[in-house]
Image (cartoon, rainbow, N blue to C red; front, side, top):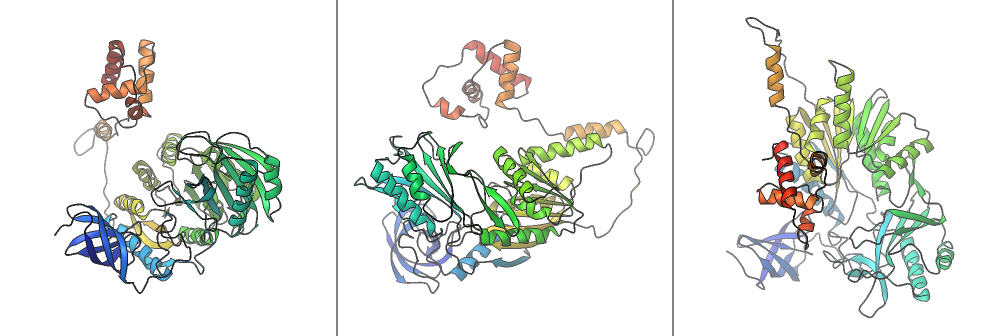
Length: 565
């Protein structure tokens, strides 16, 4: 059975998707319905119809679910921030546990999951220590702020978000009054004109320190002293800064930060560890749950004080410094230089001397360290007792997982904000000799679909051992050493050829430069893949000159040199 757009149907919601949408079936046809929860009997209107499934809009509730509750926030439904506010909190936790287990089964290939009860919150509101509010105008030209409606850049006016701290509302009120009284325009995304784009507010739950950072389409503020006077009347105000962002982009923060008043940071604690937080610092938004999350990671790490630990994707050293309290030595790796500077400073202010930090990609730093160790210590390999990894949503690169396994840690603690990529990586680690011992969710983001997961993996122990003597050399029954070398060469991974390498080859051989877009064009004409070309695909859409015959031949020569054609 299939349906058409605008069909009105009655459907029973039996499940929920990963984005919080209700899932129901009508005569075998699957419908995804936003704003519904498990147990709802609803009248819905089809807005998009595919062959086997479709999307529908909730028209009316015929029989509400027993798990449905009235949202606390009056704009919860149109706002894109909370997907689950209409669902009872206990049911939210069950949904998130099911989400984790489902991904580990479906993607990770696990049949038995050692799941521990999810860690929820006693009060699942007012938990966020950070909020970013866009500033704009309504249809009548009135200044407004709030959050974007789901999948849009339309601002839903709301100064009192129930996930954020109560202080946010008064700060926003004062900023909008200052803008109105001094004729300070809001930024317009369509025209690229106007000044104030966003307001970033950070709050220290333990210290009660407040940071306000205005993101502006420029470098200066009119009537700056009036704004400072107004904001500094608020108790706890510690830092007022300006972030210049003049790019036509969806990226909120600019790279340049200027301190207008006070200091350029606030401080806060997780447990007994003190952290310095700047406008650009990555810092977990839910401090109460973060302490539970890191405590769980520390428990799973099983530290006794004698271990060497690697903390990959360490940010400003939040987990690293937690671990350093119980470890012999901790090495942290993070790609953002500013974050590593914060991590080193956080170690200093906490008088932690057994933590060392490296700037770079984890998938590059750890393999390089492993290879260098082998060169410096012939016949040996680098070892870690414990590896903790807390990657971004995309998870870990496979080469990093292989290096982690090669270091033969007793335990790997994987902290994840996306259980789907976690499951994918756990499957790889399983193939490399590690098995899942414990899984536990931590509800870091109540009222949303997101959930943190902590997994403990340990090295598989052999049930039995077979002793084999192998003799290398020449003669009967011996394995020639050179044959081993040849076989190893066959398994050597092929070097990835980058656009930078091609450009450098051409410049060295021919004495001229070629644009990335030209390389991409030649590759496209030859039927070669065009991935990893920075801006090339976009630039190919624009009016431009084509490469000369001379440059085409040079590019083809480089491609032949690197055995791409």
